[in-house]
Amino acid sequence: MLKADPHGFACELRPQTASVVCALPGFHWGDCEWMAARSERQSPTAPISVYEVHPASWRRAADGGLLSYRELAQKLVQYVLEMGFTHVELMPVTEHPFDGSWGYQTLGFFAPTSRHGSPHDFMAFVDRLHRAGIGVILDWVPAHFPHDEHGLSLFDGTHLYEHADPRRGTHPDWGTLIFDYGRCEVVQFLLNSALFWLEKYHIDGLRVDAVSSMLYLDYSRKEDEWLPNEQGGRENLEAVAFARRLNQLMHERHAGVLIIAEESTTWPKVTGPLSEGGLGFDLKWNLGWMHDTLEFFGREPAHRRHHYDKLTFALLHAFNESFMLPFSHDEVVHGKGSLLARMPGNRRQQFANLRLLFAYMYTHPGKKLLFMGNEFGQVREWDHDNALDWERAVADPHRQLKRLLGDLNRLYRAQPALHELDSESGGFEWICFQDAESGVLAFMRRARDSGDWLLAAFNFTQTSRDDRCIGVPQAGCYRELLNTDAAIYGGSDLCNLGVVATTAVACDGYPQSLALTLPPLGAVVLKAEQA
Image (tube, rainbow, N blue to C red):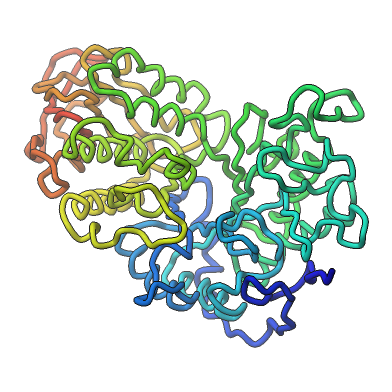
């Protein structure tokens, strides 16, 4: 059996499997301005709003074929700028044999998939986005690899990249092989791959897939299906050392890059500094927040009052890590339906719930990630073999939802209170979180400048809350910056007429308050006007 080059820079188009000899030098980058400013644009205090894209199904060519990297760049730049996202995250474009893996069964750890063009074409893609001020994050999969005979498995007739013992070397969920992180050669191979994408392709960050499966030897295994570590525990000590080395090396070589962990357990200090025993990631997907939030929003509004803990619990640990709030591809596949379809009620109520969900996400502490199609209310579940339903995006109420999402991105980027202190408790303060019976929730977000803050108030019921008293720390006039029930977003236009003045009515522990109109299934964001 002939093997593909593990370090190959390009591959034949599937179903062919050979490596292709190609030279990477010769591309002329024009993104020096982006690269110089990247550290600031990706700092913990910066707004980071990520649009997650599967390149093969975002859009298709007129004949139904795949777009090239250069065609994707042209269309994505225009759309991402319109929508206000700061970054694009690509589901794996590392070469992979099986379309149905969505790229997560990687074999070409140094090769962009030939489905969309050449290595220089992919460089042109990144360069085009950078010139437009858009960052590029790549999904990267060092946790496992597939069995394909032309790949890494039994590469020299022995278990070279994977563990020989299936209790360490095979993944029970995905039927794939697990890297042997105890071998220096394997670790170096993976580190070289990560560096390669940052250095040769100017990638701005790596989202490391399936970190939980790397950290635990008993991940998804029964009691007799795993081997303990040398200390008798279930932690994969070699994988922990690899993760720490990965983050140390990436940040030493490329200051300002983002290394993001998809990690779903309570492993401590995933984003903690290496000097304090942490793993050193920049961000961790807050999957607990995502699951609880979607469970809450999936309930009928009349029943939500019994489940307010699904919203409030996340704030007990929201500042233990540096979090990213993900509504990713995983939430719109395998029979789950689209985000819109998961909302209760008739179609009008579903759109109102989705507007409310997005407003809650964008005002909640944490960086943001949204999978393609959610921004305009894709109706059907995601299908990797077909493009999104773009004809819906230009018709109401989908167009109106898309407008709201764009305005949320712009509000999030323009208001320091919504992003500067995402990982610090000083950036958040509850105003009202114990009134489950009325379905109202309210909190403040603060910037580094303690005088710069916003009020976000939510009504999770189908009944309008008129003249609802909400306490505020400062007397004066407050301007409504956003109302998800505005007519331009497809709502009933129950708004607060632009400006609301406080009254000397004590509420929520403050001597003054606002009498707000909180529309049904609606959210409002207000800010005190400067004297």
